[in-house]
Image (tube, rainbow over all chains, first blue to last red; front, side):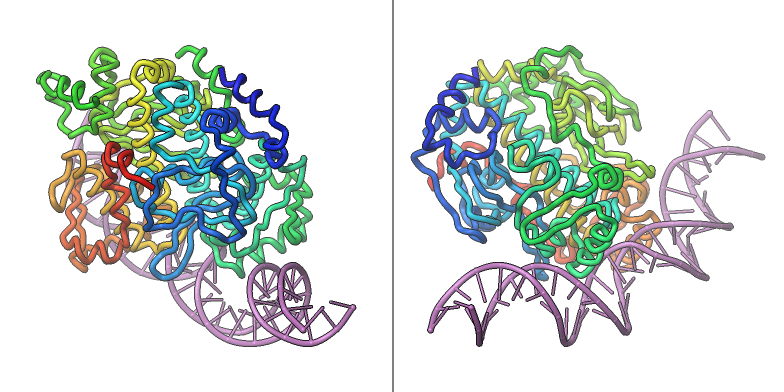
Length: 255
Length: 255
DNA sequence: CGGCGGGTTGATACTGGTCAAGAAAGGTGG
DNA sequence: CCACCTTTCTTGACCAGTATCAACCCGCCG
């Protein structure tokens, strides 16, 4: 079972040291199985982990730090697709095309474990339950992007921002990187605007309103949600996708 | 290897009959392995295959017909996330949460093969390469949604529409359901607007411009791209994600 | 024949973009 | 600890892409 290898990892304290977040079991499994301690790579803020147009045969398990996946358009505009938090796999989509179609760039210092796609796939033969867990992670990732698309496609700016902040709060809580109402993350207004498809000045104005209404405060790299209830009412956030059932329960249910 | 079972399926002509599209190998594999001929379900246009809020423990392989995945917001607005074409798996994300968070609804008559998630997962033990192929399909699906998000987030209406039509053309060609410049699909202006986050009247006006410029013509359920070059120039379409490498090639490459 | 889902149009409003510039804030070397 | 530079944040004036609302029309189906 998953718990064996996960427990195994937890014992190794040096490794645990910077494994601050509570990675999902799949991540711990992968770490144990692939001996990921060996090939870790560290990135500085703003470095590209995966670059659009370049070859890519590996996925990257984020162990520490934050990253974004995005595309730069012809006219120089940027659309950020999603945030990559500790425990997420980066580059999964990219590596299936041989050459990357999106760029993944670090937002902070980050520790990342590269896993060659071939190695991962070959593990399926010996550890089939790993595949199932990966699917589960994928499904969550897909849901995050889908919710994001809904926000960008159909919600006004204020709701989008509220939605984004609550999504991040919830996801970060899940990995132990946020407390009840706040988290640290270098969320510049430029980043927010590129995530949500807005302009920087407009994001600024909306943020001022939210601040004036005592709903959120972003100062430096600290994001504080001052009134979760009201902000949630604004955001209309789907909670299910951020708190998915453990895979075991899914398989035991009946149609 | 994958080809065995795929070839096996192709021989069965009665089954092949309505398997007009060239399903990807994974689909044919699944069909063979799971004996999907047995449990097929037929849907009429406008029926829900998966309903938001209801339990969901299966994925659905689309064998014939078209569907959309969407969410209805509080205020009644709809955001369509993606189109499901023959060969696509529907409900994959949903079934990982126990209860569906999106709705999948038929656009035409459709034939669908339900696959209990548990059944699929258990196959990984006996057919590990199936998992790898499913990942590949997933990656393509993710890329489609991601490109969609980019269009909605950062592109003006005309480009969005051009992008959408070319995406559909290319995807349909891949399964043998479109010729060089046209395809049939009940693409109402309401659907287009809900896919792209626009209003119906505006879609109408943009469509008129495109028609006036002899770029596209939508009449009834027939979509004809009259000038692929110009439309492509407009759309700035990423082709890579619609023509991914076969999985074998990916695994043989080196970092 | 009537109803209805689509498509089309016009008038009008507004959300959010653009441009331009300045003020803070944060980081860095001396 | 300060001067300086860069990044980020703010603000204002103005503009434009799209939304809304409200008809009306058309073709199809029962």
